[in-house]
Image (cartoon, rainbow, N blue to C red; front, side, top):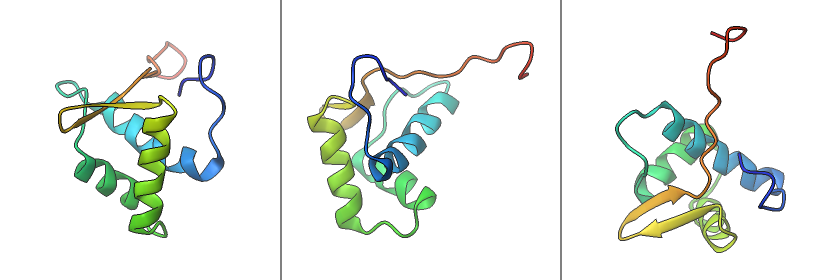
Length: 89
């Protein structure tokens, strides 16, 4: 999760962002997702989030530069995937 160029996220927004980041870090062939995929990923990780919560979280992330949109695809601005080291392989 980017920390240097972005202000910290409110906890509940972070709870929406982290599943998106984890999803892209696990992908080898995709670097983006649709709004529908983002919604599914967020609700899977946060079943108590309403549709309005999810839409607000995605809008917040877009407006503050954590995500950006090209056509119908959402991208994480500064995707930070932890690379395995000898100690965590």
